[in-house]
Length: 81
View (spheres, rainbow, N blue to C red):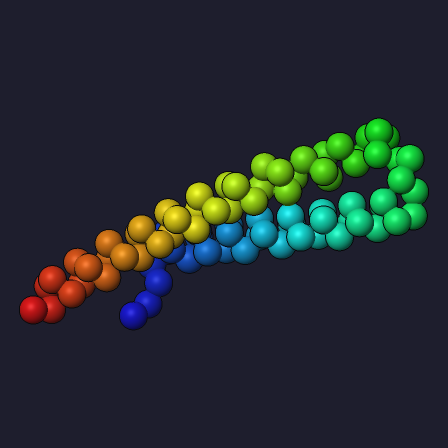
C-alpha cells in the first residue's frame, strides 16, 4: 500500500517538528550547562517555546495521520470484499 500526498506531507511535517523540538532541547541543555544566566537574552525564549508548542502540534498531526490512514485502509478493505 502506498502513501498518498496528504499522508506523505503530514509525515514530513511531523518529522520536521519533532527534529526541530529535539534540536531545541539539545540547545537548551548546552545553554544551561555553559551559561545559565543567558536565559533572558533574545534567542533563548524562542528556543524554549518551540518544544512547548511544537510537540503538542506534532502529536495532533500524528493522530490526524493515523485517522487518515485507518480511514483509507478501511475503505480499501470494504471495496476488496
